[in-house]
Structures are given as structure tokens and as C-alpha cells.
Image 1 (cartoon, rainbow, N blue to C red):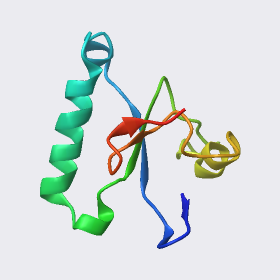
Image 2 (image 1 turned 90 degrees about the vertical axis):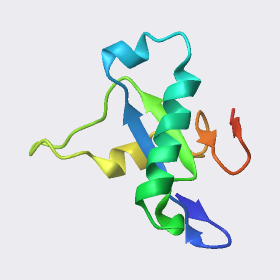
Image 3 (image 1 turned 60 degrees about the horizontal axis):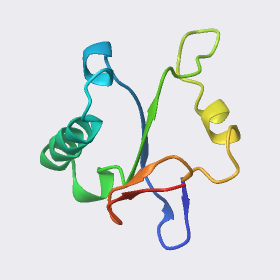
Image 4 (image 1 turned 180 degrees about the vertical axis):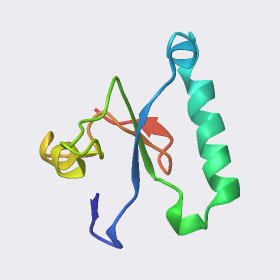
Length: 90
């Protein structure tokens, strides 16, 4: 994602497994994911934004179509959880 200060900011688009998706407390899954990333990645690599999706767009070679994800919204923060602000963005 574009960022005025750093040039780019990391955003993770996540498709949850069915057993986690049906959990009435998805916030717990998000907290566990953030903790996992914080333990295993350098601080600047830990995603700031998290978006849960039903599926990810794929290319003909079955790779994730990142450009399609970027083109879906004018503001890529919309519908994401901001780890720094600790809230979901509308």
C-alpha cells in the first residue's frame, strides 16, 4: 500500500480456513496472526493492515493477482484492520 512517510506499507489479504471463519470471535484469530508475524518477522515487515477475504483473485498461472487486489479499491485501507491504530477502517 502507498504510504506518505515510508513510501509503502505492508497489507496482508487473508482467506481464513472455514473452522476459523465460522468462529464467533474472529478478533482472536487476528490477534494470533499479528502475534505470529511479530515474532517471526523484522518489525518493518509486520503488516500494518489486515483484510479478511472470501477468496483471492488468481492469474492464469494460479498466482495471486496482486494488481487486481490493488485495482479493486480507490483507498486500499477501506475494510482493513489497522494494527497501529487498533481499529477497523471504513
